[in-house]
Image (cartoon, rainbow over all chains, first blue to last red; front, side, top):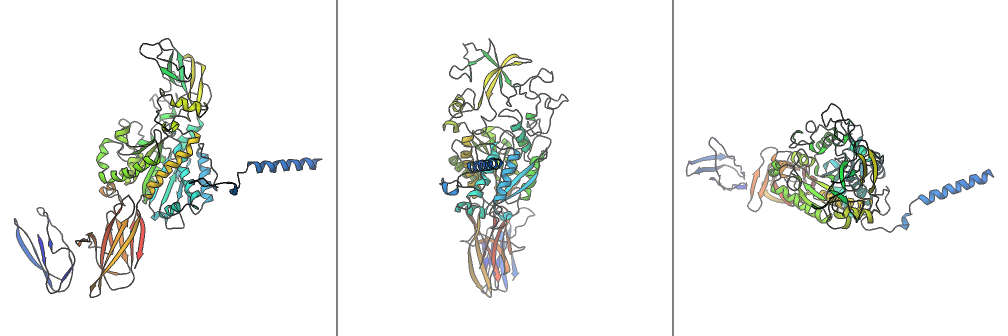
Length: 60
Length: 579
């Protein structure tokens, strides 16, 4: 699951705040995109029961 | 005295001229659906050789320069031009950006009426344009590429050489059929010199046939407890090269031009009739080059004879999976309408309803180019009495039809001949213009019905429109522009086969006149699910615009002002809208 947290009046123009990813292959990647209007940072949490989770801040 | 004679002669000549002119326009009452007083006067109750086709095509192009253009797509083996009429409204739009249908006929030399049907289409479209709103709209949107014969050498040899209704099927490049080192040394022989290759029969005490007492022209099989009086000796000919065989190496079956196309091609030892390699015949290669130069061709029709069929591929069992369910839906929808429009014709699939054939034209058009293609097998015995009949010689419908409607013009009565090998025989049978070719009075009617089917097929090539444009202000000088592009016809811009093999580029939906920040395809407008296109967002690439459906795209733009949205599809044409 990929979860995007918005703050300070940021709005999402395209993309979903909660996005389920079916699978990520071994040594594989998945690309997700969002179009967001606003300033500052957004927080992205990605994880699953079998992998643990990872959180990053993305500067707009 | 001499003055008087000259005067009389002049008077006589002018009277003759007046007598041979057709009626005046005001003497004609229009029959529904037909051009009342055509500029190009053609009677559609006879066949035309290559010279005749050339003349008709030139006349149509000369009479309607704004609707018809004539070009040669190349030369045949013997150097005959392969004419193509491009029919569209040249005043409206660029023909190369209009969805097109390609129509040809006569790939098999003896399957002649496809050429007349194809030319009838060109003639009808040009002659009815003035009075018929539907045709005007059709030719504004679409383009017809009409190649009446893709086998002009074979066509002329069928007409001008002695032949049967079934020969020649091939073109005329010489082949040593029996591999004895000699070429075409023992073909059919027109023994009685009447221009026809007929049947040979001989009286025999142990024959299994007798003359039908109800019609002495017809031979019928005797029952197991009866004795016959005749035996059949095959088609008219003799042993020309003294090898003990009759008619074993003629020019009439060298190869099959419809086993030469570059999809699923197989060599001659697997697929009888294949020539050297895919597109090894110059006529087919000309068609290939033409089609590759016209990626706007979305539909195709190839005319054959006979049997009353609307055929689609696959030709081989191995290709069943190639025709997937979405494409079969399109094929079914159009062909089932065809069954309604052409009574007596049935919609069939080549490999399961007819026979397996590899390297056929319709398989290349669909398999190789993703073009929805039918082959119509023209003429069906059903048309004789508007009820089921067959071409089986044991079915006497052909004899009845010839007797009561053609007044025995289609049959050569049995007559004696002294054969060099068989002795005293009799020659007779149906002429080559009967059995597979339409009789004259039914030619125009069936041409019209088959044309109506191709018009329906062409009508349902994609028609794209930039439908609705919705704007949403995002604040800070940003604007969201959402455009819905519709396809108002049955055919998608890309058949499933096209998408599977990346045959044609995607459709481009672009915005000009605005500063684009982001661009995306909207998969679900209600739930706001979209896929962003990172590179070149002003031109969104869409893999397909499905038939009778729509796609939605969205841009985030900066600033305000006028902008234009354009959809540009190779098989779907162009459409623009400004706001």
